[in-house]
Length: 358
Image: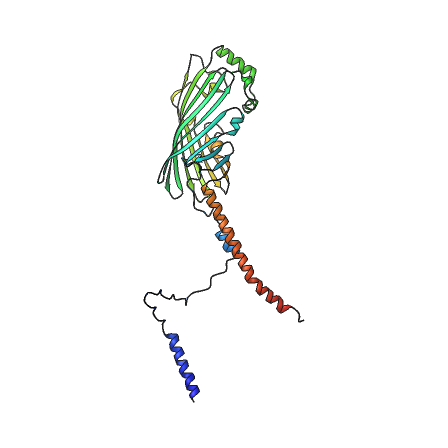
């Protein structure tokens, strides 16, 4: 009878212990967590890692990603190779650029942009460019100076506006046969003899000295859905112009300057010089593409505004994205390797159980 009584007593004590709450921790010791509701974590699989992959479409939007219609610049060490232009970030919020195609054609050029002010969502920038065509007896120059403002309104929406003062000058009466062959081909292969005769008939031995001035206004807005996709709307127009020429004669027919420097002074109707476009812009790891449609007073001029392709690399943001992708790949390989090690003993036991006896 003693043994059953002992067993019963132990059973009662065990039940009481199971229903007794854990003792309170001693003073100064951390509380013991209640793990009664804990469950084992799910095993990471391929779908889980695909969900965590840092694709640009999943990354937050970057308001400073576009530089051509905004006040923003490339980061130091960043390079952008576009269809027509090349830009390099040479210092914090400072970039330089050129149009290599024009350099090859003999039109030497350069541009600079300086993001002077960044206060909260507002950025202000100064920008300028210069183009020069020197040939025997003639120099054509164009200098552009302007400013741009960008404001981040809310979320991924920003607006941009700016103005540029354009100064175009032509000095001399050149022999068009001295033009670079590539430039002649680009202008459609002008009739050199007829053009030279017209110039000589107009100018004789007198050099031409003509200056044209104009003001161009540009507005744009972009809506960024993520770091890859955005909607871009742009518009610009020449709103004021003026021409000053030495002498009473008309402007000579040099490379179309007689049409470009038409006799006008003062305000220019927007409908005569407008360009407007809407485009979808995609910015991948390195490549950038913008495609869209538009309207313009000059047929086809909207294509330059709505279409662009570039290859972009370097800079702090690109390096951070590369580190993020590298960390994701390293973690994925590490966990997959750990899973293979855990599965190896089970596989070996399974093969041993199925193996025929010695």
